[in-house]
Length: 167
Image (tube, rainbow, N blue to C red):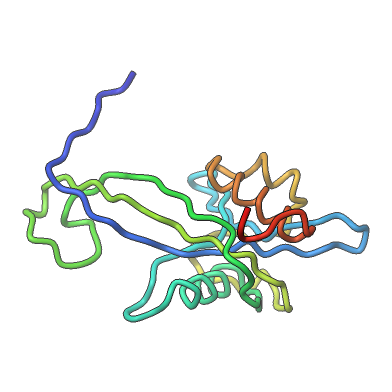
């Protein structure tokens, strides 16, 4: 077991993103995934808010920027939670800690189902190397983080009418 990291400081941050689904000509359901080659990272599109931006507006903007797709926001699917460590100097925002102080960031990600309207994944921003439409069953295995695979499963259930936001 690895050494446990300790810190005297923690901050809460949030981001928002979405699951963009579409039915292919052969009837299979696919999802838009983002890929960072150097890290072998496959992820759902998400990001941090701009000044004064709502959760839904952040999700819509980030998904559009990161995928190159035009989308319409749908119902909220789920929230995920995780923590990570950074030095105070690496964090966004004004912190009253020395730059080399370790800070735990407790992150909440708010996820929405998104309706695909059009656009082209080749128009994505530079945050990721690739954006691709991938069959949802394959995508569930390819996603790097298991919490995002669970979000995808819930999104598919919403899309297929097997779940509601009350589930």
